[in-house]
Image (cartoon, rainbow, N blue to C red; front, side, top):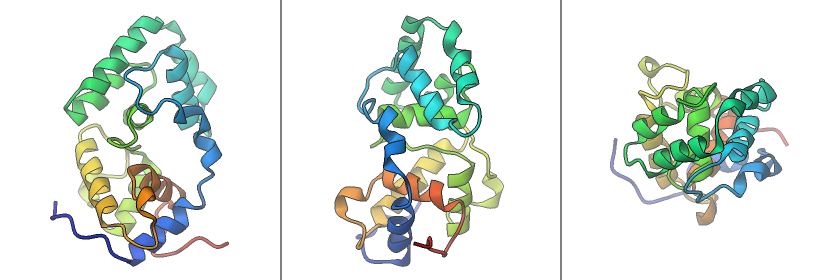
Length: 191
């Protein structure tokens, strides 16, 4: 990865501000209280499943976790939260039923949005359109490429400048833009 540059106005900053602004932040309400959690219990884990899989099959996914004991879920999520290896943290959480790389990355982001972000098809499509995700990495969330994904996202956040307010130059803001844009670059959303 290249050296971080001083934040400056750019088409990328305009794009991130415009697309992240289209994200309905009330959608994040069920998971915002989990930020800085050292572990997640069964109910919190189900909340993240429902949040991440809302448009797919959230209730079925959260029922998959029902057979787990709260203490076991807490032990597993605590271990992932303490893990210094990003790939290993993502892989640990995939021990939960129905948790692939996208759900595992959502669980990590819910516990620590300053360190982690969500890796899914929509965000990968946007990164590829921006020229930051090579073809050989594919378009599906992957535990193998999760550390690379985080590195690219962190580098992009470091490059954001005006008009993005400094307080919003975060992984979460970038994730919201990547998600909402669904690969549309350089197109800005219509008002």
